[in-house]
Image (cartoon, rainbow, N blue to C red; front, top):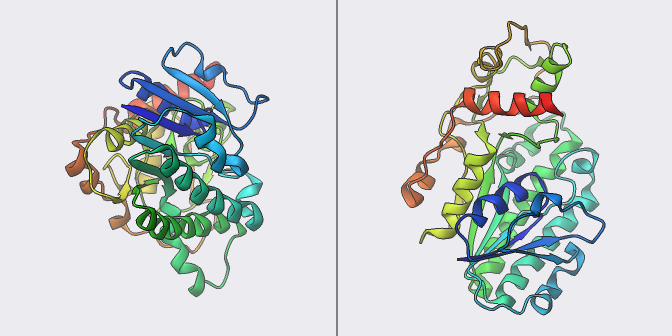
Length: 302
């Protein structure tokens, strides 16, 4: 199999390239420009770096001559973390760039377009009923918008769309400040991380398992549609959090209940991986405790 990966030097991208490199004949790693750090891609003989900014992604068929590429993984998304998550102009541009990427995939002759979504899309419908909303929701709203646009576009151009919903990814190299990196970062500094009551269902997945699932979706003959990429270990957030001290070998306190609730409601059904399991045979290789220990040890070495 041959594959294209946008955002190939990002957190998920570099792990996916590493996973695919073990079995793929060729991988085209799409990088924004020559100022980017691509040291994570060193040492892979079957990885070719192609420089192309998202605003120019429609020109990718002119930059890649190969017309025997099965999969196009679109991971690149400006403002997936940090302040830009709340910038509507940046987030809306990502929707346009994603559609442009699908057209580029079709122009190259790819059979599958695998795009990164988020579980946060499912919260978008709640926005209309909430009194107080966070600007940070711009990210989830635009991901859902992108999903809908791609459903229409990919049908129109006859390109198989595999929408991969990510949720609560953690592992070495994650600097997003999400729940796990925030919690472990505070513990390493000797500080107490603060959380809400943790009464919502959550599913955490170690990065190597996530990219393993993504690789299977590319390799296997699967149905088009939406796939949630999780561990299958869905439980209340506070139950996950309470497992962290033992996993890292520390007798420490977590500030569960010390932050206000955000008013959002999560449904356990969102975290169902049965379709992923049935279509690909996916099974996670790491328990939550194993993944946390690996991540914690990696963070301590930085």
